[in-house]
Length: 526
Image 1 (cartoon, rainbow, N blue to C red):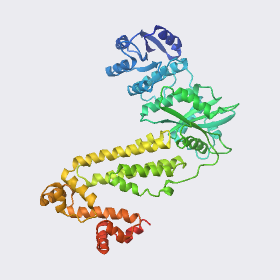
Image 2 (cartoon, one colour):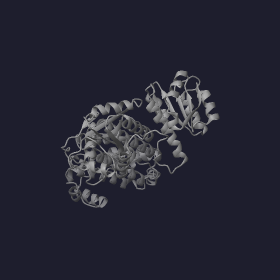
Image 3 (tube, helix red, strand yellow):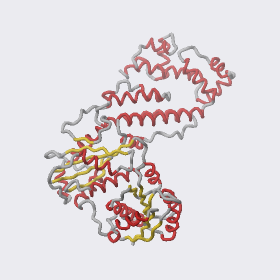
Image 4 (tube, rainbow, N blue to C red):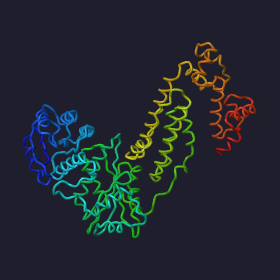
């Protein structure tokens, strides 16, 4: 038998919970009752319960503190928090401490028993690593029929790819049944703040339980797919509307105040492959990027225009240049213009562009690390982590802002590392060259700016940069010249802008440094 401890400073709440729990079905027993956190901590040490159900707000020691103390003690038990407050900060702290579930008063029998069952299943899983999907405890029924549950697992394992098989064919193949008319609902969670994988798992658990017990369909199953989830249901009468379902599922997430569930619905067309139908539902849901505030969408048979991000890439060549000089304002400007150009494009193109931007930033960081002694351990952007956060942004505006914030944070931290590594006189020389590269600038000018002897400065500069001052000035000028040539400026004009009056001399110097002459270089970007 699994031992359960109740903790609440209101006696009648403990009595209510005692009557709501299906003790026999769960193979559980009530081992004790505590009316404050201090008493509860003592009982946990003595009784070693498998499950603790505790209120959050209590005298002496609140539920969060009790959970923290139990975790610190090393005692393994499932912990279910109960609160009369729909505040995300409570839930967030509880998630960090590994809470099994978080219930909001008034307590519902079905939710309470499901939470206890989940906690017991977790204990069984810890005790036997071979048990990947624990069976429901006692006599409680599984939320989905066996055949449909097996199909759901197959969808998760195969990513929904069943070739040309239709939904009806798949349901029959796995021994399930979807009577009446069927529909596919793709759902995803969006949040304007950073989040953890643990939070997402709790959200999926809540929705899965609600779908299995909601009674909205005659038959239904739930599967994780495509960064979100699929609900596939059928009804002999009228199918529930997507807005109705969104409202029901949003209510399930009420304690997670910052999270919104987005749904897109599609109905299978005659002979349509299952994956195509699922993709139409997902494309419908992804319209939330372009329709802030809207949370429920219905798929249309006509697919969105297939705009590729390469097709609207005018002006994006400036992005690598801005990154290479750690210009966070320039980076933000180009990234914002790119997303504006993609407004209304399929969501896959938004993320192809975002991935390209992240790759460009990492290439720039790689160049810094290779050129600067002491930056070998420079950390790159974690592409997959950033893309995961972007996928759960509520709108294109918030997506753009989050990506720009990640880029700017990395640029600022990189600049800080470089400034720490560079000797101050060398930094002064770099800034001087950056400001006056188009003028005649000598080592003597640099020495005057730093207050050092020219000979000593020359040795120090080469030691820190690996290149002598004269060659450094030439490299800066050639880098500027490349940008001007890409923008379409004439060779004579470029020579003048980077400090050379003799265009022929500039061309010979450019060819020696870059490897191709200015004319050939321009042709590469025409």
